[in-house]
Amino acid sequence: PHLEGRIIARAEARRPDLRWPLPPDLVQVLTGARVIALRRRSKYVLLDLDREAAILIHLGMSGRMLIEGAGLGDFHRDPAILPRHDHVVFWTERGTRITFNDARRFGMVDLIPEGAEHPLLAHLGPEPLSDEFNADYLQAKCAKKKTAIKPWLMDNKLVVGVGNIYASESLFSAGIHPDRLA
Image (cartoon, rainbow, N blue to C red; front, side, top):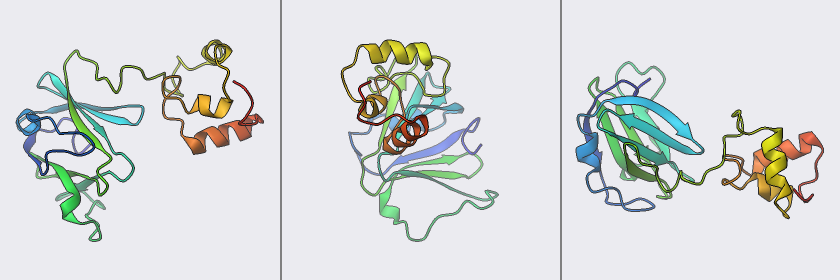
């Protein structure tokens, strides 16, 4: 609610890179743009802009989005978080500040031109709670694999967002040993 429908009045990139280089025109594209929608694909956050582009964000291992500003209720800056790890900052027209903070710099921020598919999203499998991920899909994909079911479930090309914990818990709940062949 702090970004969707809002205009990014000002943007700042405080370093040229995170995990990979930031787009050189990131600040120019963001400044003055309206965020049309926020969505998620796998572990990526996408901000659709009115500028025929979208912003792709991945938090990495230590990244976080910090929300600050008047009227935000319980949102506030943790004083233990050092500002030097605030790498990309958006200020909305309402004065809200949204900061991408990443101490380890494993996260990333990139631009996707409208109509293009980002290479990081191109080969992702279906979402685990989508209609595309069903028993028929599982059977067809498992029939072609000679690997253990747990690493199969954690392969983002087959199904996205299933990490170690979800794979372990799902298999335990289903009574399937993680080393069983897919």
